[in-house]
Image 1: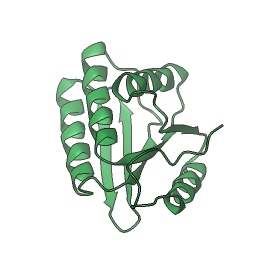
Image 2 (image 1 turned 90 degrees about the vertical axis):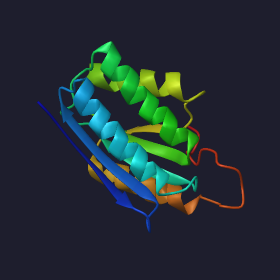
Image 3 (image 1 turned 180 degrees about the vertical axis):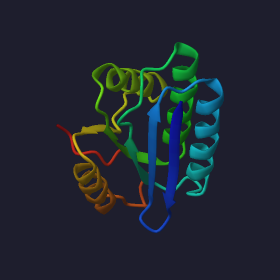
Image 4 (image 1 turned 135 degrees about the horizontal axis):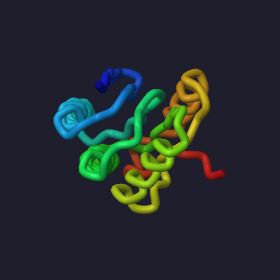
Length: 142
């Protein structure tokens, strides 16, 4: 059983997505379509993503491939920072791996420990968005 939500806040330039449970091909496809539709609402403008993956279980390869493709799609269409919250080490590593595979260099992902920290990281990133420059990361280098 899996659950997900995709919340779009155009004014704040943020997509907040939550995923939990064990996803199969049908459920990840449903999430991906909703996530990609939310991404399309920005029409290529820079925006951030808060990805709350607490409770998400490690995915089978075919499911992880579609998850990664959706991540790659979003990053090719304006995502400049993605704050990841996860409570399972293997799942966090899998999410990082598919992000790297679908986003060259993956300079967008920031791992955070709580929802409050994710909101803070996203808010700080939004202050660095400059629509006059090409789409690129707004992540502060480590």
